[in-house]
Length: 272
Image 1 (cartoon, helix red, strand yellow):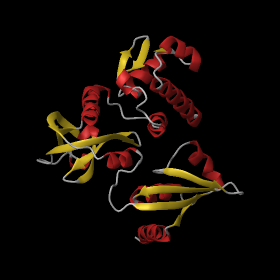
Image 2 (image 1 turned 120 degrees about the vertical axis):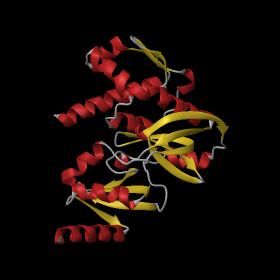
Image 3 (image 1 turned 60 degrees about the horizontal axis):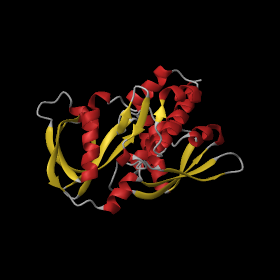
Image 4 (image 1 turned 180 degrees about the vertical axis):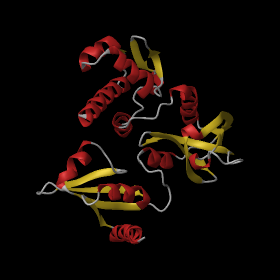
């Protein structure tokens, strides 16, 4: 039941985003009829799930993207919006919008940052300057991806504070930006070009409905219903925890050393 509800939500959100991305001015009352949901549900869609979009019309009846943002979402970003329940950042929409604009204007941002695991540590908050390149949602959590000291770094948006968009600009490397936009990865060093996995038919439907693996691509579906999947340009640490969760229904075919290293770690846990 929960799975069907999530699929209906994903379909509704993706359809709304595609229509907004095409420049449509949407009437919330008409949408209620189109998707057979109440107006309250649609208001929640716009005010919470889609709150980070840049609207020129923002209710209570009509919604439309700002002209400068029409067509800016690609299919990958639309899928990310539709397939994940994002953390609620409605209270920080203004800061989110500022970062989006800084990315567009190639302006350096400054902010204080404290990692989640250091919440109770004194003097754990540090100040950073960053060339922002991309806002990425990973499993429902928003991250700001950018360049600092000639290295690509990621910062959890909700752990940032005292955000400021400076007057300093930077030269955006369009090749790096394209790579960042087209990946789900939060690791930017020691990537493996391709990890190939085999998923048993028993659980294949879950991987067909949505991408459960980073940068997931279907190679082919085997005659017995198994799936051969590829994760391209990822770090093994992003893939192996998901494989462990789905054991024994999924295994890494190549590189073989990634599967072997994971098995050794599991054996060491079991021997304790």
